[in-house]
Amino acid sequence: MTKPVQLPLDVAAIQSLLPHRYPFLLVDRVVEFESRKRILAFKNVTCNEPFFSGHFPGNPVMPGVLVVEALAQAGGLLTQLTAQAEGSAHTGEKLFYLVKVDNAKFLKMVVPGDRLELDVELKRHIRNMAMYTAIARVDGEVVACAEILCAEAQR
Image 1 (cartoon, rainbow, N blue to C red):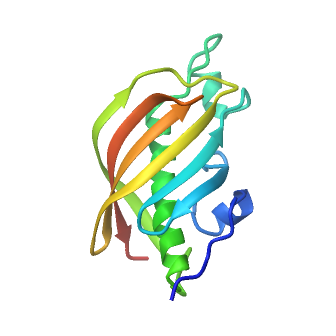
Image 2 (image 1 turned 45 degrees about the horizontal axis):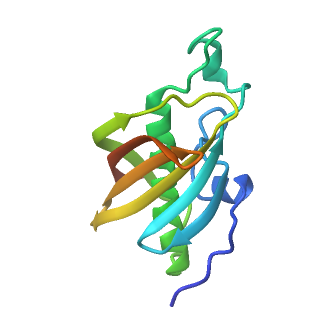
């Protein structure tokens, strides 16, 4: 039996599903969700991000690896919300690790003031692993994309 997920999800709800915390929680809001299919989430990029002080002083740019990490976290939310929608009692207790990134492309820089749109689709789910097709956009324009593989770890 599936349970509806109440959207949008705020940071408190996201923290109940992911283990990440400041400064490494890179998803601020979930606005769309289709169980076993897709999620759309946002990361508001502000001038206060700790990585901007060193990347790069006077010309702040969000590191591409952190854009990929934000996409992977959105994928983790897709997996966790799917489990929640399907009635799993262990939502938020599972831990997933990023194990592979393929075909990553960085097309535009992400800078302070941008709202990063994290659009992630589940491509395949096999046992304890999930493969996602992930696209990051700012103002509707693709800034990065990748195929991401995450695996569940035993705690």
